[in-house]
Length: 312
Image (cartoon, rainbow, N blue to C red; front, side, top):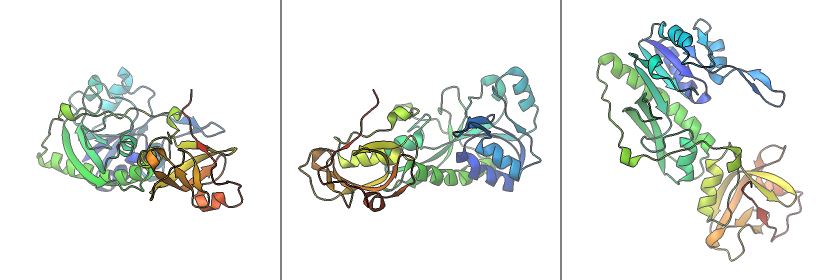
């Protein structure tokens, strides 16, 4: 089959690689290069970089506004049996989509977690499983009919970054099966149950904090759900530190939330008498490291208060 691929983020790369092996890529539509890094160097999207290396013969289009009439006409003139849309970054309008078969890969078990940050919100909410959904494109965000799904468990130690990579890999065979069903004429679209919809709004740097007054389980979800971005930062003495991985610690605490109970093991008091163990941290401007390595050589007396506050 000839496939027209719309995508920008790394989430779609395993699927794009699979499509390139099994089908013909008619063209790739991705976002334009943007300034990135401290030097603000113009940087292509992960999809554009991959296409340059692996599919040099496939046209790569980088329109600023994909729905502009001239751009839409160019895209619609490309012969393709199906359009696959994954983490593209622009909404495809009705005029562009008219009379085209287009599917989207979404990182949740829809209708749960419609929106920009489904992976993060699944962990933040304490979900024990999530997955990917292949849906048709609709006027409302992530509201199309479900064509296929696959599930995966969420382990307590898993961060949003790790779950992202797991779901990205999971998506490739699901899209593959959907394209096979299309070729056989055996697609079975299922409308979403609107009564079960939950929303996953976009996150920002303003979310990079944790309320240590909450229980250790809520703090664990917060840290893992926001790692690697936007991250969770705390103040330890005179240092700003990002928490990367934590776990609930056994036993109860009668200390105020935020109290460093066991400095060498990184055990901190949380709300409700619970305790959290800091496993992996990253000092500002430094590398990620185990708590034991961070604590070594630093003066952190028992009873030190660790703080994290929401921006004003």
